[in-house]
Image (cartoon, rainbow, N blue to C red; front, top):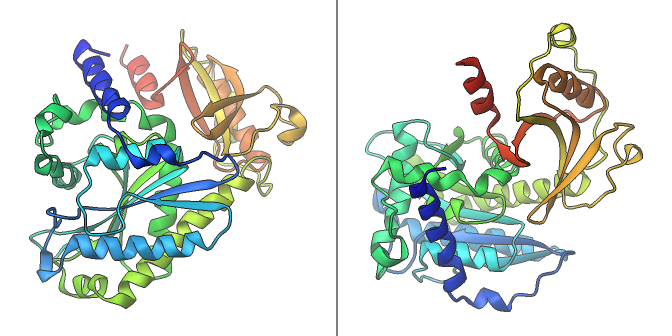
Length: 373
């Protein structure tokens, strides 16, 4: 990490320890699943006005409907970044979620574009994969300029600069797989329940997602600039239906999290088994590979009887989640074999992770760096 990146990270972290919020009064309860719902924009920040509609009002109505449904479930606690037409800073939204020790952060927005673009898309944090994703992140991040003394609070971050986004994945990376799981559930519901066009799960550098220390998603519920979509989102029926799909996604995510450890249907993975078993050793010095088989709110002893007989189980706590890993080796060919073993036991979503000095590192970067040497 460069000195500049370290400076930026320290600066951003310092914001949270100095910004007061009423969320300090929330009592943390490990038996309660805490969801922070964030209605984008508000107050003097109207969001986009595509089609003559107002993003801040639509986002708030959807969030309040989601919250009402979730609050009816006894073991779920809902916290709102705003419940009225008020302006909340980006750092304030993130601070509320962090102080509440939330299990999920869900931010709701509406899209706009000077074309016939339409459809839903849900974002998780990541470097923008293309110019379009960068433009969406830039638009949402530019709310910073509406804040008083933004130069002081966001010194070193420029929403208009792609380079400023490079350091944004450092903290949220640990929650990326859970964020993607929730985002996928949201988009699947929009597509299957509402028969809407899904533009998919995407990654982009949203400041508010970076600064929340839990699985986080930003949902663009559709384009207000597309006549049919804008009218739907501005209607009570449309808002209730979108809220219902988001609610179902959150509940399915929670159910999967509660049941993840030790569960799964037996399914023998056959594709590529011969190639993996016959592969020669690929040793990566200084790197340790593990197979992540589960992430759950449950804390289990890392013993074979809890994991369908799999041995060499390790456990790591990240925030309020426990991540469980199978195997430990510097041989990439061996870890691929263990990945297939895990999948054959029913852990169908198992995947390989790489570690260096006991810290998670990007697997593709490790493999790419080695192949270029």
